[in-house]
Image (cartoon, rainbow, N blue to C red; front, top):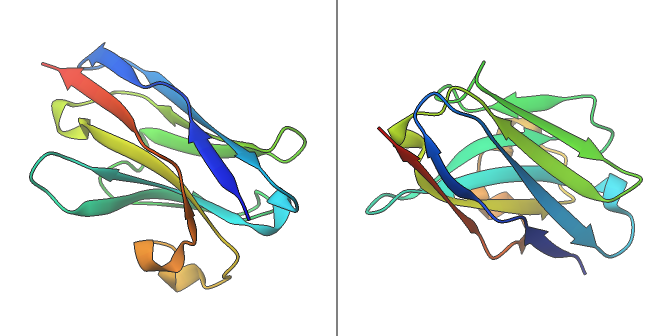
Length: 126
């Protein structure tokens, strides 16, 4: 069992930066691939980024590549999402998620993830 708690998001101007964190409780954090997803108003949930248990491999949606960076700290059981050059279209509720599955081609699928945080609002103003 893993409990995930995201840090508070916030309001930021376009072009600005924001860092989200997700704290995980439970054992064997390093055995979980961690992902970030988001849901914008009126839209379906979409994949943002994922990082394997060791941190050696990361995956990004095309829409955030080169702007967002996912990282993790297996000592403190946290995963981070550094978001730079934010755009109004990045406005969404952001969720972190955990999975023990190791299917790199499927890390973008929400159905792969077993545990989810409660979500945190990120608003980017133009």
